Image (cartoon, rainbow, N blue to C red; front, side, top):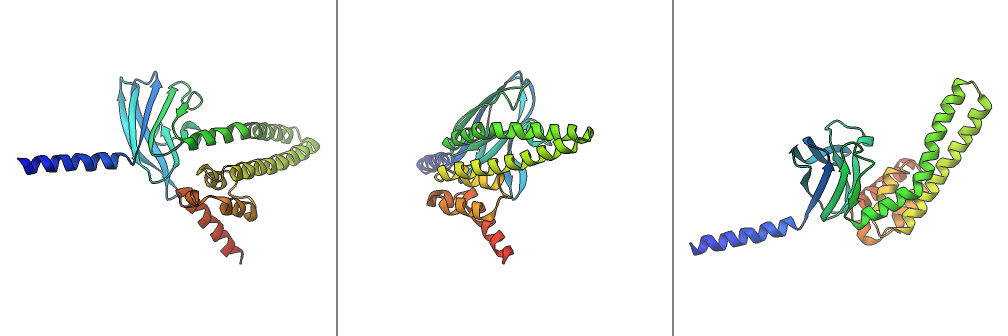
Length: 232
């Protein structure tokens, strides 16, 4: 009996220790009564489900995942959704809280959790005006093409090129200013992956040792090295 008690205590302690490494997502989706919610992340370039839960009357729930270093996760209501239908958030070990509504699942999302998420939100605020103008340009270019207004189309094309350069510049500067955050290599890989190699390499070399050893730090270094080798 005594040996059994010791074994149970040891098992409990080991279990508590392993849970310390888990990501817990505490979420509430207003008006969601029934359905399945998925927690996803990118693994080997493929978006995979790491946890899911069937909702039946309770709009509050928890999802879990192992996590080695801070990375992007996605909350989803559909197994085959598009990027625009998912709530993306930067998570670290510990608890991330997400509150949203069923009606405006993505746009109403309020996320509280990692310091990396705060950095990502700062970037999104900074770049939102550039992205919004890019969407307007695409629409105006289409309209100019329909109207066969070649002069306006050419002017819009030039503006689009300038806007793209501005986005690259903002993103590079932001990454360099946040070289101690895992968000920096993530932005290099997701937002400006087709930028000049010297810009990507500048970000790569600026990262702090801790960030270099993170998931996205390692991926950025591999990405830059691969491009360098292909250039030779």
